[in-house]
Amino acid sequence: MTGLIETRLEELGVSLPDAPAPAANYVPWVKVGEMVYVSGQISNGPDGLITGKLGDTMTTEEGAAAAKVCALALLAQVKAACDGDLDRLVRVVKLTGFVNSTPDFTDQPKVINGASDLLGEALGEAGRHARAAVSTPSLPLGVAVEIDGVFQIK
Image 1: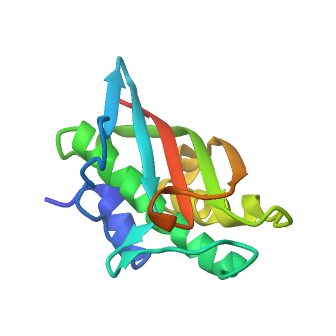
Image 2: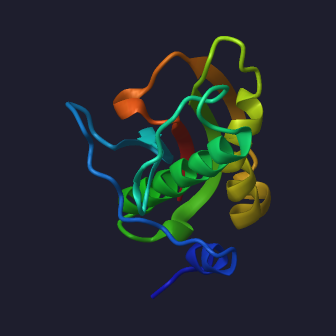
């Protein structure tokens, strides 16, 4: 049965992927009480890795689309942490977004807005969160964006 959050995502024209498996020696999420800490989710869409460098080979809009893919992977991990019931999600607490960008690129916040906007549209007030958006000279596998997050569940 599809829950309210997944129904809302479908109304927005998106669906959750399967929760990605970790690519190295770490776990995808850790639950501590009512908090879920989700490891960094890279921009890996249905057609494969979304690679590139903002300020060079990618536009801000393309970066924001990559960040949206990361947000969907974050939600997929939260769903896994909640034993398949995403409606246990109470709120998004904090995101940290890493943007593969050139030294002179300064629109990291606009890129990470791709994730923040999706979470706000899908979850309403529960999707509003604290956030950091930072530049990095490279990311694993050459991806454009990586985002980790902290979530409150019931």
